[in-house]
Amino acid sequence: MKVTLAMKPGARSFIPIEAESIVPKNFLAGTDLLVWRGNREFRLDEVFAVSVEGDADRSEDVEVVLSGETFRLKRVGEYMDGGRITILGDIGMHCGNFMSGGTIEVHGNADGWLGREMAGGTILCRGDAADYCASGYRGGRKGMTGGTVEVFGRAGDFLAESIAGGTVIVHGDAGDMPGAEMHGGTLIVHGDCRRPGANMKGGSCYVYGTAQGMLPTFKKIETVQHEGRTLIRFTGDIANRGKGNLFVKDYEYLD
Image 1 (tube, rainbow, N blue to C red):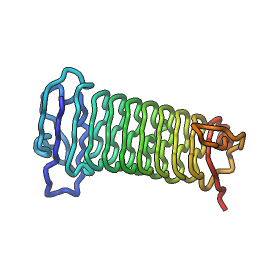
Image 2 (image 1 turned 135 degrees about the vertical axis):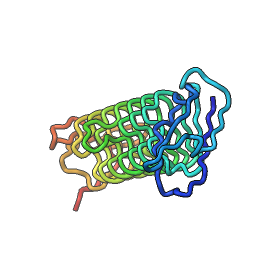
Image 3 (image 1 turned 90 degrees about the vertical axis):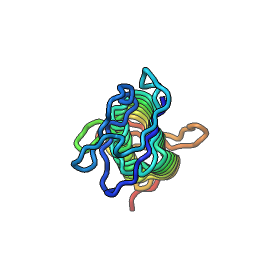
Image 4 (image 1 turned 60 degrees about the vertical axis):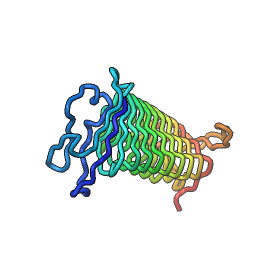
């Protein structure tokens, strides 16, 4: 089954739309789905031009394609457990919240908390991801616990904060504090970043560029080879008795 949702031009286009109902399994029931714009509830067909091709018995066989002013949509794919969502543009905050299966592909940029506390599945972001990608929410103790998030652009601050499992890959630069409070999992930043691994307790963080503002609470161990790269291995964060592994190509301490 392929469900195409093309957003209709809206007079109040500055108001975000809470769209947690947009997950593949919800289209199996054939009932009217609802979204919220501000304090008003709307049927899906009031906000989108809806087209459905084919049918399916399982969420794994459902693909949802979103187009138009998709940057207004928040919480798309929340609690998604199978199937596929393709977003032909930018997406708003909290895309893939608590996701446990399936695939979300964003062809543009993603706003904050992409893949927040996800437990499984795959998120592909072809553009940039804003702050708190694959992180826990404020006040939470665990971020991502499983699955894969891959960002082909750059990522903002607090990338993979409190990550406990899974894999996060950023092909560009990352902002400040990637991998802060890591408990487990793997974080890979192909570019530069600032103060990686702060207060990490476990897991592995790889920086293929320069770790700027390197924290002095990491202990230098050895030089290793990793996928054809020569990296310097540190362990820490010893300020928190951490046993995480931080691998960097180059590093600079704060002045």
